[in-house]
Image (cartoon, rainbow, N blue to C red; front, side):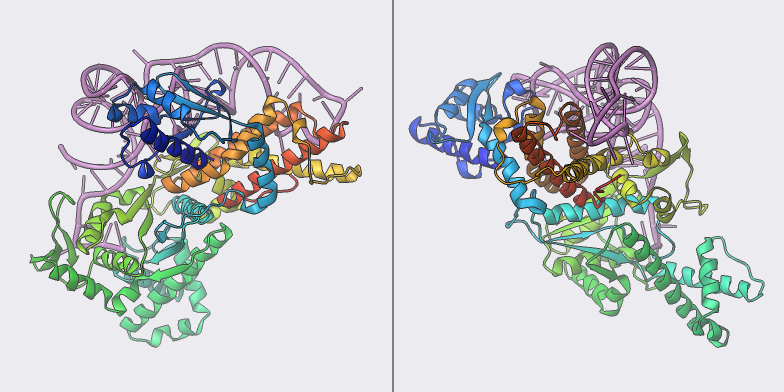
Length: 556
RNA sequence: GCGCCUGUAGCUCAGUUGGAUAGAGCAACGGACUUCUAAUCCGUAGGUCAGGGGUUCGAAUCCCUUCAGGCGCGCCA
């Protein structure tokens, strides 16, 4: 809708430039802001072009606004009224038929309502979670998963060509520690007394893996193998099993990926070496203190960073530089990485590497997801990775379910700390936004169920929408009309939480409407029109919840 | 010490990329069930947008600064 208004305003600006001989440079590429008016006195939509352009064309904002209004295309059927107001805003009120048409469109497009095309957008690679396969996912990863997965659904809905990927750190020191942890637990299980070092993985899941290992062929042979080989097999076994567990957790959370990309692949294919060579040829590496360093340019980062240790092993950073090079080499024009907020210090270095490899650093967008604090009975549950005292994603899913968890993870901007209230997530009342929104869907379904029971004709063809008059009905329709614009803007800003807030607003409007207006009323015309309206509401709620990955129940 | 994120109603948070009179929900108080689900709705009250400067027609939003909270500053990942 905003785009339609934008186009019309542009045509008027072009006409102004022609007829009134105003010098407006490059009307076509001008960014025109159109916003929803929050006050009905200011119409339905408003633009501030006159305010932003006034100075450069040498006119008073209000005069320019008047000119633009006068030069609007004369055949416009879109608007009821157009007024200039305040310091130079132009306010548009849309004609009633336009709003009615929104309902028709929803009925026509069904699950496609809200979808849009974005042909000029670059191909996007979205990487998220990417937790190390050294233990189960915890709640923090859950937030990253919910944000990433919803963002992927949102971007796809808005026409972006997108792939999702999980980067598996299955190489390096931590894999050795993981393998040794398993081996030690296994030996303890076999009655061998051993020390268990402080820096090893102490979680119970390693013990579980050890007893599992005992029952396999691999376990049976473990003792006869040389240490080195046993360690390697144990590492691989642990890593694979833990990754399977992660995939299970993600799948019960409704999250799947287009690809899992293993770090070991970068080592095996020589991509890391190739990346180092390229950086060297671009003069961005330096040897000092026995190690190979990446040299920063200017203030790219606080200091230079090690790529290859004195031991000859590449660092995590070297692998990550190669990984991002690999992604860009596959033709993606935009890389979106979702990281935990504790990795924020790492952004400048990866960005610098991307730039050093010859790409615009803007192709990398990192979304930082802040920490989650679980709250029960009004008190925060303390968590720390160091003590191994973290709550797993699985535990939260078992307790509150996938729907509530996803909805809650998306109920705040991701760069803001989140208090996750477990009691609230389980509550079945107005306080709990996920039930409040799902209840809209269930209520509409219920209306249609009752209609069927009573043998009421719920035919959706050719309703007389002039029967819809109360202001709540108009407000509801206008909010339904906002859905596509909201999605497009949320996608552009990479802000999936906007979908959540939109749905809560829609739910408020609907419940208030439902309370005051009987759908299955005596008057057949009104009844038909209202059924048509609430079915449209149901459809938009369903489409919105689908983007959040939350179910739309027919009955609650 | 340096860097990143955050600071909006008692609490939890939105705020359309700088717009018009700063908005919701909880909690508090007062109301509404002969009804398509009261799993709901309506009303009242609640604000120095952390403080202070600046930029301009216009600032919660941008810049500087102070304060407070969180996180990070490895040849770990």
